[in-house]
Image (cartoon, rainbow, N blue to C red; front, side, top):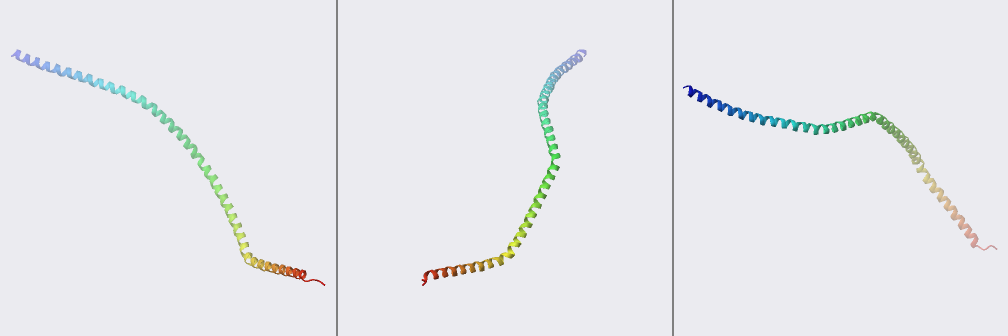
Length: 143
């Protein structure tokens, strides 16, 4: 009976040793995978960190440029407002002068063309009379 228990214990110990070896081998495998992942992680961090630094520098530069433009905007708006106001004043003056000139030309223009037509007609008649008188005196022989 002691041999029987001893043989059973021996079988059990052998099975435990086999399982222990498997666990040790799998633990070694897990450790190798963990170390490989750590090495790859460090490599990825190194590669990404340089890119992140470049992006960070670019963003900082763009932020500074945007801040500079933001500071310039109010001054530019004021310049534009004054320009638009001066253009508006100039346009209003021009419109007012055009309205005055248009009013002056419209009222007299109705009377003046009629007056000019009659003056021109009178001048034409007097020239015709003068020519016919000159022609008549030239055509009649003087005695």
